[in-house]
Every structure is written in structure tokens, then in C-alpha cells.
Image (cartoon, rainbow, N blue to C red; front, side):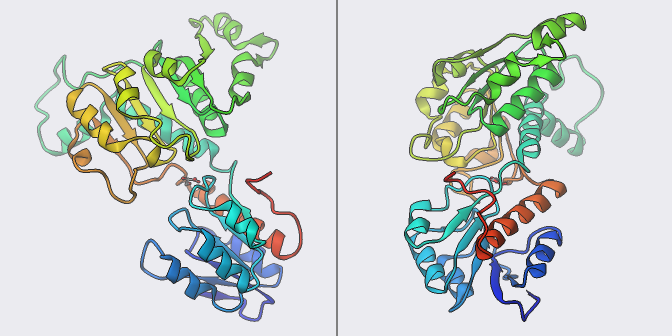
Length: 354
Ligand code: DGY
């Protein structure tokens, strides 16, 4: 699909993206916009090289693509100056290779914070209240009347929520769970982010959050920054993972860390699949039927490790944490702005190297 065929700058999007604002932004600034409409969901390096061709000023790509040396070299040879991932995570992008070939890299933070946190909260609630199992039970025609023990789950109020990775999304999730469900909070951040600190120590009018709850007749919640990840795993009832994926967070949750967690804990992952050792997780789910997980991401996407799909104590959704209309249109717009800025000689709106 081609928009503004006579535009001076050739910008490619490897996938159709939601909304038209991003297209309009580019064509208003003299870009020819080419959108790849191939049916194949995941494009290979060869597919993308063919798209880039001999002349290409910038590319908007997706987290399913492998943006390494080969692609940045091809883009640079075609005169390309900019690449933007339509995602906040950029573990699929070799930023050093991009820099080597003089290609600026952008990502799309901010617009997906609340949407992603809302999915993590949804998975936490769905796991706590066994919503997917109950839905399957109804549809299978098994409901033959109210029973005191039917699908009994956990009350979140008063339980402890653990957050690992207290950046934008982890902090938004923590606020939702603490403010919305009056959970106690324990969190750990590998980079010592102070974002969540500002919430727990911040003021509600002239009151601290604790005083605010007291003043509204609520039982105050407690919060603490853990000194190790293990402390969070040991103490929390619901744990949500929000780190970036890199060498230090690969298999952050593994056989040993799972063993530390409460037998009835809930683990939620909306970050990246390889943060959890999925084989160890399947084994843990088998051994501990009261342990539950809510997963939006998988180690070998789009596949699940053998056994995971059969586990009743797992809720699995296909990497949809940022999938709200407003957010996806925003991500497309930011990605276009990133590329446009560089192509036109302005700074990249969101450069992960900043
Ligand atoms: C991201 O942005 O990194 C998500 O995984 C997709 O929205």
C-alpha cells in the first residue's frame, strides 16, 4: 500500500498500523509512505531487506523483527537515517549496530503505560478469581446451581502485591493495585528507579497516602522497597514482572526463584517471555496446582512450551498488553514522529539511548 507516491522521502512501515494520524503526519512532511501488507505475520530479515530496496529514508518496524547488523547495514546502504520500533521494548533491536551504521533508533514509551498496567491488573484479578476457569465451566454447561465452594479464589484486599521492575509500567500497575484494591506493596527495581517511591511517599493533598486512607476510614496499606528480588518473591501474594529484557533479566524467574514463592502465589508477566524460564514454570504449575499465572508473553513467541496450554492454573493471552485503540494509535504516531524527526533533521522524539 502506497500513500503520497511522489513524496521526497521514502518511509516504510513493515506492518499496517492502527489509525491514519501517523500516515497523515508523514505525508504532510513530503514522505512517500509504503506499508507492507504481506499476509505473513512475522517478516524475516530477507523479507525486510527486499522491502528496503535501494533507497529508503526510514523504517517503522515491529518487535517480532530481528533488527541487527544485517538490517541496519542494508538500511544505511539505502540512505536510511532512522528506525523506530512500534513498541517500548527494544530487545529485538541492536542499538550498537544501528549506531555503527549511523541509523538513529526510537521506541514508543509513555502511551502504553496505563494500557499495559491495566492488562497486568486484569490478569491478576482473573487469576485471583479464577475467571477463565469459571467461564469455561459455564460454557461447558456444568453449572447446576450455586455452591459454597464453587470457584473459590483469593481476596486481594489486604494481600501483598509484589512488583519487580518499578519503571513506568510497574509503577502504574502498583498504583492500580494499591489504590484500587487496597493491597500492601513490596517492590524491587534493578535500576533503583525512584518512580514508585514518589507514589508511596507522595502526598494526597496535604496528606500522605497512609494518612489519606486513615482519614477516609480505610485500613492503611503498607509498602516497602525490597533489598532483593528474593524478598519480593518470598513475601508477595501477587507478583507482577515489569523489567526490560536483557542479559541480566533473562530467566530472572527460574526453578530456584519459583521455589521461593508462596505455594498459592499468583505470577503475572506482561514484560518479555524470556524473563521466565518457561520449562521450569510448567513444571512448577504441575507440582503446585494452587499456584497461578497470568501470561501475556512467552519465551518462544508465538509458541508456548509443551504442557503450558493444558494447565488449568495458567491464563494465557497473545501479547496484547498494549492493545487498546488509543494506545496503538499513539504508538503508531510516536513511531512515525521518531522516523520523521530524523529524516527531516530534527532530534528523534524518543531515543532509548537518551
Ligand atoms: C512493547 O511495547 O514493548 C509491548 O510489548 C508491545 O506493546
